[in-house]
Length: 102
Image (cartoon, rainbow, N blue to C red; front, side, top):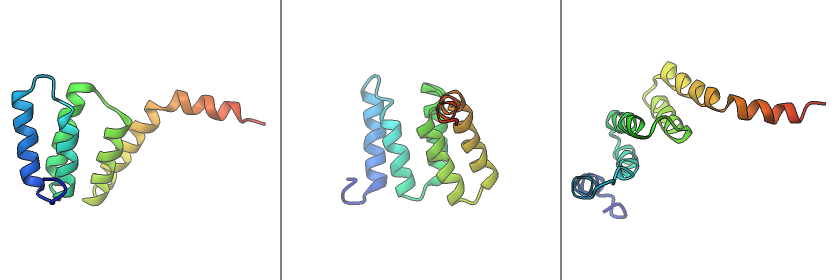
């Protein structure tokens, strides 16, 4: 379905799989990407929010949400997602920059 650009049909199939297969939350990532391909950006944001409630915040989710917010011209929300990524990686990035001090 994805290769034939039948995104709505693919979304329906993934949703059915989720109903019938225990522990199949990873399909939510596929659904979100298909919603983006199908220009269902508000739905994709909702799907990413659902993923966040299940697994927590990740850089990948923040990056995808940031891209969506930029596409729909919600700059403040895009900046907020970027700030989440920076905050999540502050310690790691600080250590990196500390190591390259002259």
